[in-house]
Amino acid sequence: MSFKDFLKQQQSGLEAMANTGVIGLHLVSGPAVGFAIGYGIDYWLHTGPWGKLIFLLIGIAAGFLNVYRDTKALLKKMARQDALRKGLTPQSEAASAPSGEQGKTDGRDRQKEHDTQP
Image 1 (cartoon, helix red, strand yellow):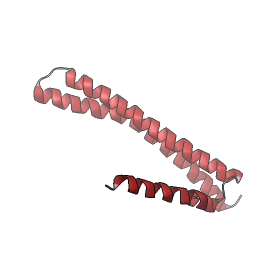
Image 2 (cartoon, one colour; image 1 turned 90 degrees about the vertical axis):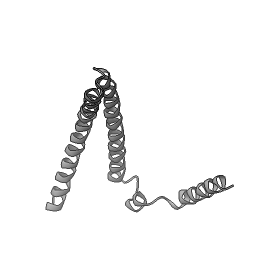
Image 3 (cartoon, rainbow, N blue to C red; image 1 turned 60 degrees about the vertical axis):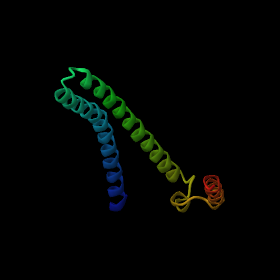
Image 4 (cartoon, rainbow, N blue to C red; image 1 turned 180 degrees about the vertical axis):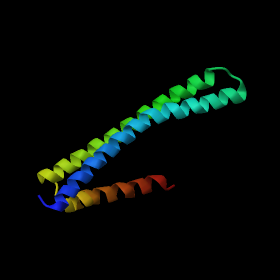
């Protein structure tokens, strides 16, 4: 095992820890920000606990949505890395779309342009 391999392995471990930390931070920060906004609205409008309650629920929903998005992106990244490691997808194709799909995408884009024009 060369020094470069060791550094790559250490970097991937640090990236995994950072992604996990971001997921945890999103789970906590959404409700905290929602509660703070609700507290400010309640203080400004003298509406009692309703602003705190409503914005806390919105913050909880936003936190879970962020966690869902982060987890989905992380799982997609892990699947792509596993495919590269197993040799299922060449690295040149991982960076760009295959030529067969590229033609289909261009056709779809032209169809969308055609639909939006009067």
